[in-house]
Length: 171
Image 1 (cartoon, rainbow, N blue to C red):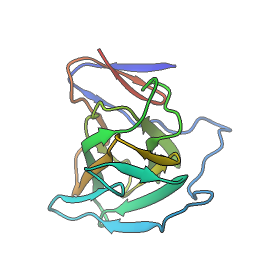
Image 2 (image 1 turned 30 degrees about the vertical axis):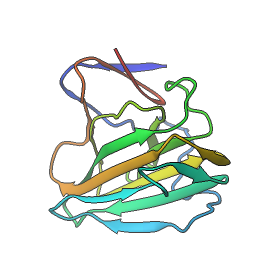
Image 3 (image 1 turned 135 degrees about the vertical axis):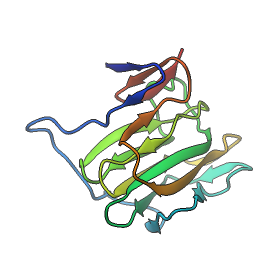
Image 4 (image 1 turned 90 degrees about the vertical axis):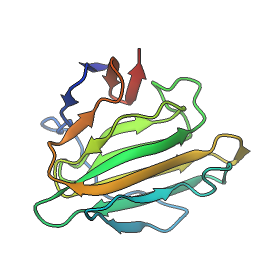
């Protein structure tokens, strides 16, 4: 589903529609949930094994990043290399961005195209990672985060990006 074409501007986050199911809690996870605090400087986290190789056995992990009151969270992918036959429709390996205030998934990323920065609507973002069984040369992902007062939304990294319901397609 085509949502927007992003040409050097900020694409707004997506709020749930009336009657749409929303969620905040993950179902089951094979690694502990990490709570991270955003501050003025950039901090980093990554999938297990980054940057060498990804070895997972039906792994599902979550990171919740919270900014101080009156601030938002800004994330920037520093690397993304996840198995994907079609990056527009991620399979078993993906990183999902959920805006806590909106209670809705904003994007799902896979493949190796690093997206632009994302700024939360409220003071928290949740990052979920799912990886399939086994070891493969795909390296996982790395994300940096900080607090900000910037406008919420998706910040374009490339000149022409189609923002879909499951991520971005670079033209």
